[in-house]
Image 1 (cartoon, one colour):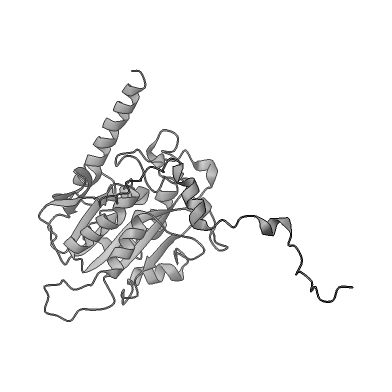
Image 2 (cartoon, rainbow, N blue to C red):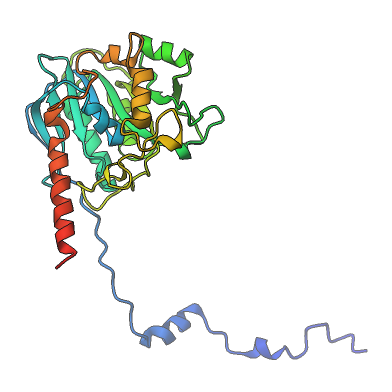
Length: 327
C-alpha cells in the first residue's frame, strides 16, 4: 500500500480537469446573442377628478351606492342639484341638497367606478365636502355572506361604523337589540366603492384644515349600512361608468325575493321592500333618523336630480350596444 500517496492526491476525475469558465466568460460568450428589447415602463396617470359646482361643507353627507343606494334614492325627497362629479371628463355622480336643508348633502354615485379611480374619487369627495358626519347606503350579497346566525328568510341590515360615532344612533341600537341590524363581521370582506368611501371618511379629519379648533384624531363620524340583496354582484371594476347592473337587467330586475322565500322572486318589491318595512319604517325605524331627506314612499319625480342622469346614460349605452350588434 502506497502510504505516501494520500487519498485524492492522484489524478483528479475528468470533470475536474475541464476548463473553468467564469461567469464573466459565459457572459462574453453569450454577448453575440440578440439583446432583449428595452421595456418602456410608465406609471399610469391618476384619474382626473373634478367637482363642477358649489357645494356645502361641514354638513351631514349621505352617499347612495349600488343597488340599495339607487333604490333608497327613489324614496328620498325631491332634491336640487348642487354639483356634478366627473372622472376624466365623464360624469360619475351628482351632489344634491334636500328641499330647505342646509345641514344635509346627498351624493349619488355610479356603482361602476374603475378600480384605479376609487381612491382618488373618494378622497376628493371627502376632502371637498369636509363632512361633519357620513352615512353610506349600499348592499351586500346575501347568498355569499358567511354567517351562522343570518337566515335568508329574515336577513338583517349589516353595518360598520367608526369608533368616533358616539353616541350611536338611538334607533340603530334598538334595532340591533331586536336582531334586525347586525355588525358586518369577518371572514367576510368588503370591497369596491363603499369600502373606499368608508376608509376615506374614517381617515379624514373631522375638522377642516382652515379651522382654528383642535384637530381630532378619530376622523369623521361614519356609518355604513348594507342592505341584503340576492342579485348577482357586479364586477368590482367595469369597462364603463354607465354599465347596466345585473339587478336592473331583464334577467335580474326582479332578483330580490321577499320574506316568503325564493319562490316570490317575481314580487317587484321583494326582499328590499320587506327590509324597508321592518327596519326603516315605523316609529322605531331608521327612517326617523333620516327625516331631513327621507320621504319613505316612491313617487313620480322622486330624487329627480339624483340618478336621473345615470338612467339616461345607461339607456343610451344599451341602445348603442344593441345597434353595434347589427352593423
